[in-house]
Image 1: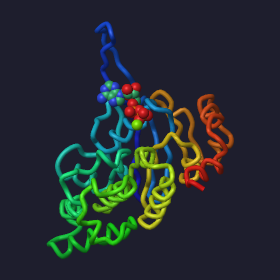
Image 2 (image 1 turned 60 degrees about the vertical axis):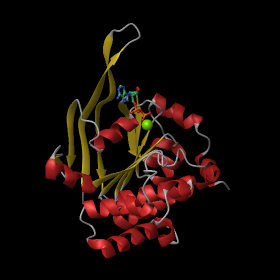
Image 3 (image 1 turned 45 degrees about the vertical axis):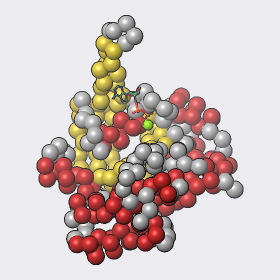
Image 4 (image 1 turned 120 degrees about the horizontal axis):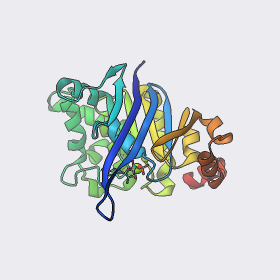
Length: 270
Ligand code: ADP
Ligand code: MG
């Protein structure tokens, strides 16, 4: 079993006020949690609560001000082979499928690059087969036709499927999905979340599902972490957190969210 752990992680940004005075903003404040392979953890909280900062820290796009990030018990390396090894294991699906793909490159290029870079395929025949296989896994067909396309020829949902295929290319153990469906049309959201759940089971992935939607957090996760102003204010098994919220903020979130079954139907567009 693989684990990815946040241990007492804090990220403070230096900010400048309107009058030029400077201060510190604790985007993430003394946060602890562990992702395990085979499990989905939802990170919920309103906009500005620090969710994406956690994703950036996990992806090594930002460094903690203090605390540690550990993969399988070992602190992550920030350079060289250690960092490459970390990137094999921890992959990301971003919120915006329009911004996360390069308009100048074909779908095949987006997938061939990580396959080659991470040594998952060698030579053009192997790479071509790898690209085809990835497209099949995210249910994009016909694979050969899709592979030749450029991002502008795809719908938002198709682009997000390509982004998911790209994240799977290095054969990671952990997948971080930062609001993966919030920019997509309501009618296709559930299809993408169901796909992520299937891939998670097939590959025994550890998934961090970042969202502000309690209904899908409950449906797709084993555990829920509730974030408020940089801190995790409540956590537990998904049903417990939603049905029996303890913290004032979670109660407000749960009360503001309509009946979860109804919400899921709305998301599914039925
Ligand atoms: P969320 O993803 O939950 O909406 P973020 O993690 O993006 O929240 O942001 C958390 C807080 O940190 C916000 O107040 C945001 O303005 C601030 N923040 C994020 N990135 C930076 C940065 N690079 N510099 C200064 N403040 C930042
Ligand atoms: Mg965010």
